[in-house]
Image (cartoon, rainbow, N blue to C red):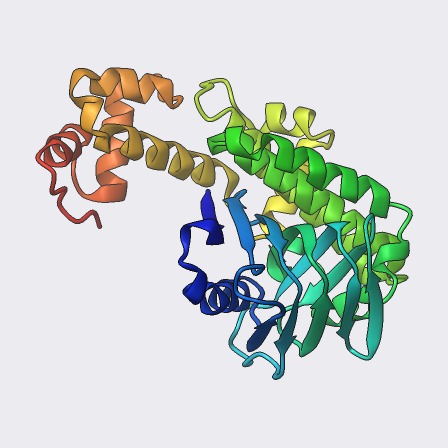
Length: 320
């Protein structure tokens, strides 16, 4: 979690500190705080949920602007924001949203916008469009109607609940919650965009996310196999492989890669000296330590024991 709080910043430096923090978080080009230095404030927490960022911000009155379009090589990111306190106007693509409590709106960080508000509190989900699985043109089309989605209230409540438990989310739990947030955000877009592409692509992307989430949550289970994954995600094994193939994902190899990466991280920990290679291999679903060692060396160019020893010395050798 990243936290910024202006109560820790000298009064005379708060205006610049708030402007720098908000323009960075909101991909803006300028930010104008309103009020005297003593009344200016910003408290902002940011949590990483596996590609989805949750942002809780409390800020004094301000105007936030992005005056130019993003460069073509910049990844498109959208923010779906819920207002808990405050009033104002959010303008983008000639569309105005009245900012008020219980209102939901979207910001496309690659397109100019103006955000003018009073003292506010907002909770935002920042999502790269490639993870959301929504074509950029459809995001623009859906933006005007997002707050009118029949799922808007559900998404609002979801973000509130995620924020409530955000400090306790780590590892697989954070990834699972991030995936659920993506699923629901995608459904919100689908509910207001009458486009065949979104419906078809949304279903496939949601399924792929569920597949990955289930695998990550069960990496240590040596019985994890395609038939079990298919049953857990309510599809046939054939459909499972078809979905993975569409994403250029070799399922069995991807599972092994995920297990090896988790084992490597465990072995690199300072306290790992009392943990045997056998224990780590078993923890991450490798029933045969020799098979684990062979796979590890093939992936990283050294044995698990060599990697563990190098890590304990404080300067692991570069893995290939």
